[in-house]
Image: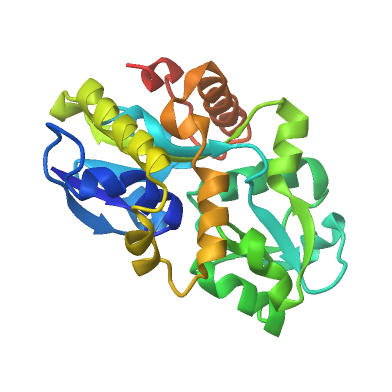
Length: 277
């Protein structure tokens, strides 16, 4: 069975047991490691592996062909994207600024757009897409005025002498009371194996929690020179109860995000009932 997920610690931690044949009766996985921006476009182009980790922001474009797997993804509290600047700019000033983002089809960008609709009266000046590992250096050197960052950047941005303008996760949670939907696991509907895939992933998550050190060599092999402490902090933040099971709060968060984004014209309207079928 073919799968694509990111090399980030939360994904390698989550899938370690399945990838390494530690889940009874689960098929062997052929893994492609790819940034979520790539998997988003693969899914929208009906290309790529049978199972993928994509952004929840891409779901409206692919629900007719892919099922949402209700575990293995990334939702949570206190784990949202950050908007960083070099100085102490306020939100209103972003109407005259260039902001770097890691993808224009990501949940991070969707949250940023929804926040800006409320807080940047004249709209963002200019948005450019950069690989997420290039964003903080670009802000530090002045190549761009601000950056939207994700993943472990929330633990490392101070090393670049940058200032947090807003934590979009805090904004979302205060505005909705719901967790933040970040990354989703999807599987091709033509497989007809939603229940089996859900079970295999859930057992992989449970194995990871029961044997947290078993995956560390695998995690660190793909952690892009990240320290062990940062990798563990990353895992602790992004692998949580919603990784094991979306639950009603998880579904409510996804429905709220996608319906709000559709109302703002950020994504097309979609049949939210398809999230569960």
